Amino acid sequence: FVITNSAADGSFVYASGFLILFMQMGFMMLCTGTLHPKSSSNICLMNVLNLLLSCPVFLLTSILVQGSTKLSNESTGSGTTAMIDSQDMAKFFSQWAFAAATATITTGAVVDRMSLKTTIWLSIFMSAIVFPAVAHSVWSSDGWLTSFTDKPLLGTG
Image 1 (cartoon, helix red, strand yellow):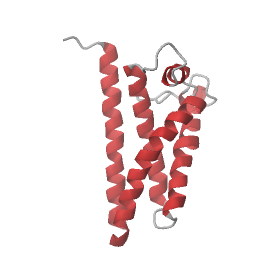
Image 2 (spheres, helix red, strand yellow):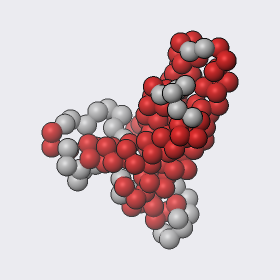
Image 3 (spheres, rainbow, N blue to C red):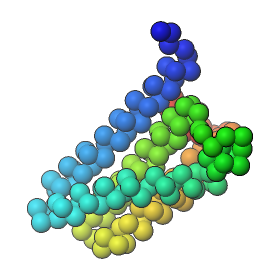
Image 4 (cartoon, rainbow, N blue to C red):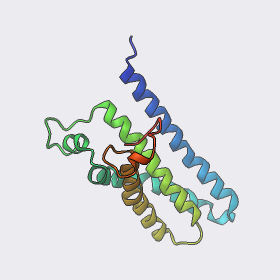
């Protein structure tokens, strides 16, 4: 059994993505502890909906906004195969974890101030438009902020 550089990189990206997803539980506990106890079920539902809705929405918009052509060709079946390789899947997983955390932070800031329906739309907007646009402009090689910043270790672009 030999661990290649590629496999080690993918494992690190997956592990980091899981740590980002565990932040969701921390945000949920923070919101539940600071608000009225009658709102705890609403907060839990909101965090679960953030995770469930952000994945398909982010998948569609990351293909369009971030311009991951290899992912779009293979995931839509227009390429040679409809499968995504493990490196692309690890990259997408970490990006989705960041997008879901972005949506959870903003919806946690407005909990008990907006209706659940409005909060869901805010979550969709954050994971569909705001995060992919910012991630593309900062971490993509043709993004307009690329020249101003250094790429982080777990860059999502």
